[in-house]
Image 1 (spheres, rainbow, N blue to C red):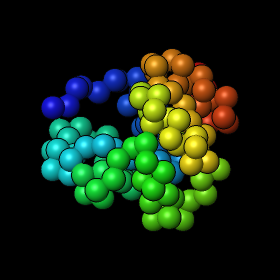
Image 2 (cartoon, rainbow, N blue to C red):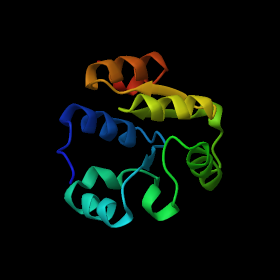
Image 3 (tube, rainbow, N blue to C red):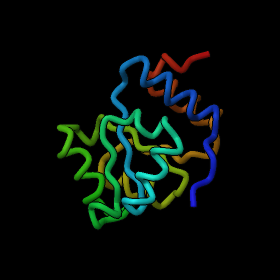
Image 4 (spheres, rainbow, N blue to C red):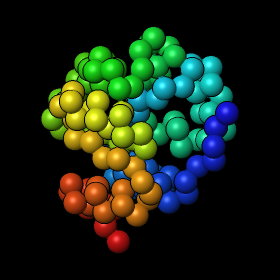
Amino acid sequence: MVAGPIDETVTMLRQLHAADVPIYAITNFAGDTFRQAQKMFDFLNLFRDTVVSGDEKMLKPEKRIYDLLADRNGLEHGKMVFIDDAPKNVDGAIAAGLHGIHFTGPGPLRTALVGLGFDVLAA
């Protein structure tokens, strides 16, 4: 089903949310599985919007899933940062015009995000 959270990553999510950084999600979950996960992990409710592939009938790394998130929320692809642990999904986001970060762990993620100007995460 769902692996447990990575605490340091959840802390970063909460820091970004508290600083009013707009945070969105795209997940390849089935709709019912994602809604169960939201009940189990409250931090999944911090996103302003979540595109759930099972509800939308599309998957990462299809370009149209990134387009859907952008269109639905009035976002510009070039100003979006996409983070994922699957390189093919990151590559798909980059091909769609987003900035992509391959998640390999909380430390490298924090470094990458601070490097992009998310100073709220600076230690």
